[in-house]
Length: 78
Image (cartoon, rainbow, N blue to C red; front, top):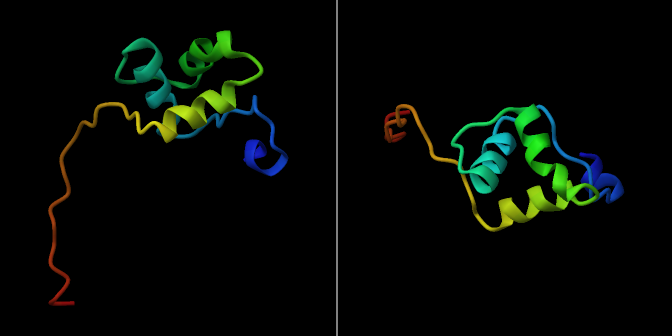
């Protein structure tokens, strides 16, 4: 987390599971993205790419969720 530790506004979390999907959804309307696509979409924001990711997260933008939902379990028996 160079962005947080050193305050680098251009540092992007590569290898993260959710950040590429969020960026692809917010900037291109694509539900899924990978690190290469994320960096391509963030290229116009060079110098502030980390800030763009942070602003998207703060705005509550999330890519659509797919897959089965986890059932709600009662932990009263445990």
